[in-house]
Amino acid sequence: MPQSLSKMYVHIVFSTKNREPVISREIEEELFSYLGGICKSLECNPLQVGGYRDHVHILCLLSKKVTLVKLLEDVKSSSSKWIKTKDEKFSNFYWQSGYGAFLVNPTEIEVAKNYIQNQEEHHKTKSYQDEFRVFLKKYNIDYNEDYVWD
Image 1 (cartoon, rainbow, N blue to C red):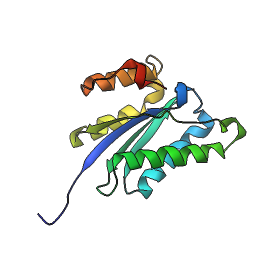
Image 2 (cartoon, one colour):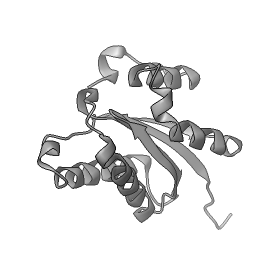
Image 3 (tube, helix red, strand yellow):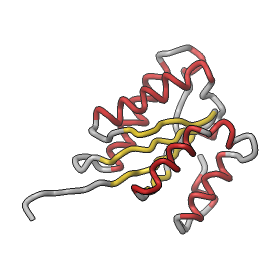
Image 4 (cartoon, rainbow, N blue to C red):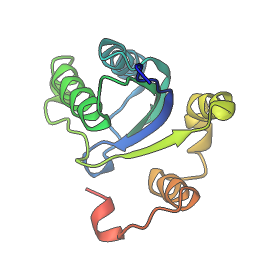
């Protein structure tokens, strides 16, 4: 086959360093837009970006030209530098070093988008850590609690 064809929808989740609740209402919309812009610049079409005070979710179509590691490296590094320029109170802003990335079936894209859009409501009853554990269980990922959080 002379062509390389792929279509991988990926749901990426990562938190702020130590899950600090620093993603305030005043910055969240611009931050989510910025994160989507980084994805777009890497040809990883963002379908939905959102989150809550201490974490973000990115649903995108992974480009066949970019590795997941490169996407995350650029998204985290660029956005961390950018947010520090927005206000002095973000001068110590950092993302956690790890992340979760989960493939999404094309038939479940709308479900994933709605899930990301409703983060505020969702987190009235569930912490980020509990939410992340649900993803790990759903995707049958073995993990050690001592190394998941930073």
